[in-house]
Image 1 (cartoon, rainbow, N blue to C red):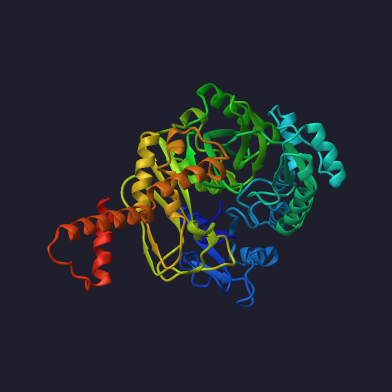
Image 2 (spheres, rainbow, N blue to C red):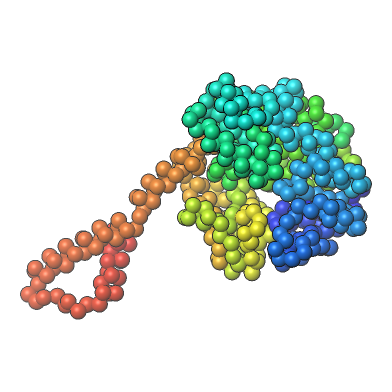
Length: 503
């Protein structure tokens, strides 16, 4: 049995895992850098160990030191997401060192971590695959040849990638050379691997993913799907479950295929199969994330399952605590990723000290966060400071609850994406549920520009000023005396502003 858990991560995901450990009465171990020494996850855990030398050392990618701390404390390791969560070498070293890794086997992580290998495995398991190269392309000449065979538009993708890094959409052959160089450079910088493969680009696609959960005895269940098509620069920003786009018959087919594929490859722990779906409900395998997903709360809210708890149980050798027919899906849930970014300034990072933090409360609201008043948001780490999730008996109710929660959520001292989320949740296309992955970069931007033009106070102010000027002229013409010309400019502007407010 697992008697202690070390989370090889930071921030809100470390807090989320620690909270489940506390429910399970499992002591916890935190790791941190000098920059993070005042972080909430450090204060929450029973034990905490610094893994950096000084202020300039901000890396959490220190497998040797983390393993040493795990062995010294007798803790199993939960990697969260990002960092070491899909590092097969780290998982293998845990296995060799006798340290329990709370996740799938190193072999599965390795096989599914190479995107082209994952495509082959899933194709053999009977999962539909997006047309593309089975192996990475050797250079721009081969890329040009393969892209022509597949047919434009195509998507260049990093072999070891994720999170939109190294990804480029190429619509014509003339754009390929530059896109290939940028994709390869970004992949090398992000993952230490510049290998690129090519997929056919599905026009106006939906990004749908299926949550699975398996044990070491061959049992695999699904926890339904999530709609993840609200993306900015290939990065998810809002997720919901169930998908408002997927039809019931398509859903059942996709869920069945996902479970059968995971059984064939011997998958255990929590995992996610990501699919691309076209307008005709045809779906194709994209990749598998062999870890906990950022958006897992929407699944938990609709199924009542604690994925972290079950990952710990499976890692300790226990079978799944329920069968597929015992999973009851209820209502709808939405998650907004709250970033320390300025949506009014091209989403530029907004580091700094949080001066005021008032968290939303009340029914059907969940906040996964490690932020607090006085905490300094650093440029050294991902700008996501919280995940705000709402549940409702139906989609409309979940959206209403999320709007209320966003309005209650007050963070001062830094800019956040809360205003952006509010605008999305009021957008007619989003409300209709008929959106795809191009929504933010195309339709939303145009609709938002139109909204701003219609609501720009400058227009009302000018119109009100002109109307006020005409009224003053008419009054002066009728009056027997000249109006006061010494009236203060501030008072005059106040009249104009009042007129503008009433315009």
